[in-house]
Length: 358
Image (spheres, helix red, strand yellow):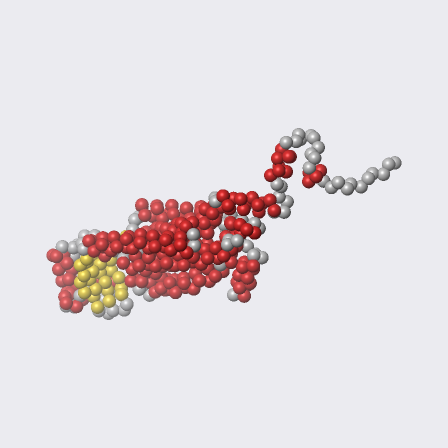
């Protein structure tokens, strides 16, 4: 930790610096690969919708002696069409999920469960969900996402500047798209908890991006008047100054979510947590990446196209050590290659030692 703290101090003072903004094409290429992989996963495999979105039936048995294999065998023996999902919930409950069923098929499943496990039909928690309920949730989630993005754009445009709002929205869309693609690649069921996870990562992504943008605004407040540093260089300094902070915040956020995902859902079998924890884990990691390597480089690229920033870049280049002015370049271009130039910077020092005659 002492080494990390020392690195943070050197990054903040500018003694050590990672050239993140200037290498933006590299980060764009990495994101493009992830986006292409997400598109391929969505096209080839698609999202595995839960019964809340495509409709189906759910049966929960509260009996400690019931195993997943027994519950699956009792339902498959009936010949129910479609996929049957059986999950262990805690130590005493087993949940069985199927596709849409007719009343006769639902009654057959209840009869099979009661006869196999010796429970009453009233003790089985039966839930029948139609596809219209899932469509309503999807519609409301999309409306909420659109309203959220509009509100964020307006707030960032007023609190910071419009170009910062554009860069932040691009980073948010980048995070959601990659998270959805990885979710499709893994094959977990999309449940209402998954939607909650997707909406939650929007807030975290913007939080980390706003922290970096606030430092960018502080570093670029008076660069046009001083003329000592370009906008990209000031933005890169801001990213380096907040790099260790973003790293520490991400680790602290990822540790509990990773514990839920890998320990709770993976080792202990808490299947009800894996959909939410996977969305949060991927979204938090992607949000940290985009706030550093996507949002700020996009912002710098947009601002560097402004006439004022182009003029600033020219002034900085002229005052840089070893820089050649435009007038000097023109005078060199106007002379022949074999002729002697009249510029003192090309001729060298005037006070040359005289040669002694022999």
